[in-house]
Image 1 (cartoon, rainbow, N blue to C red):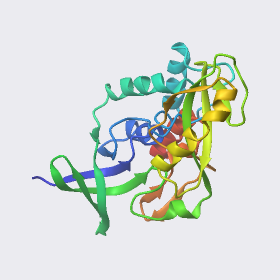
Image 2 (spheres, helix red, strand yellow):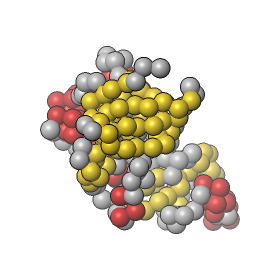
Image 3 (cartoon, rainbow, N blue to C red):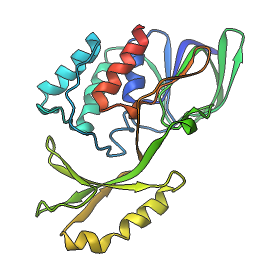
Length: 257
C-alpha cells in the first residue's frame, strides 16, 4: 500500500474540524465514528441562544445558508440536525479525504512529519501529516483534556404536551423540541447514565413528560480553549464553543491564520 502524505490531519468530523478542512488543501479528516457534527447533533447538545457574527467569509456564508433554510432564529437558536446536511453540501463542492470508523492507535514524530497509525475496515494503515488539528473533546494521543474543567451530560428529547417546567428541561424555540439534561460524573458510562435517567420515571410522570429519544453521545460544556500539544499539533475541541456556527467559523479561522 502506498504511503499517504498530507499537510494536515484533522481529528474529528466536527463542525470545527470540517470548517478547517474546507479551507485547507491536502488534508485528511479522521473520525472514529460514522457521522458528521456528532458533538452537537448526536449529543443533543443544548446551546443557549447567541447571535454569532462569523469572522470569515466561509463562516458568514454558512450562517446565511442556515438562515435561508429557516434553521436559525433571530435570537440565534439553531436547529442542529438539518445543519449537518447543509455542512455536507459544502463537502460536495470540495474533494477531501475523510476516513470514517477509523481509530487512531499511535502518533509519533518522524522528522518533519507526524506518523499516524490508524485502524479501519482495511486493517492498519500509516498516514503522514506535517501538522495535526485535534478537535475532539477528550483528545487523541495526549492528555490535555484532563487539564481543563468540563461538565458531562446525557441529554434526552422528551414529549411535553403540557409544556411543563422541570429543572434541567429546556426548549429550542427553533424546532420546538424539549431536551432534558442530566449532569453525570466524568467516569460514568452511557449504560449507567441511562439507568440514572430512567430512575427519574416518577418525576417525569408527575409532569406528564415522556422520553422520546436518548442521545447516543454524551454532551460536554467547557470554556473554549486551544492548546499546543507540541510543535504543529494543536488541540481545539469543537464542542466547547457556543454553538455549531461559532465552532465552524473557528475552524475556518484556524485554517486561514
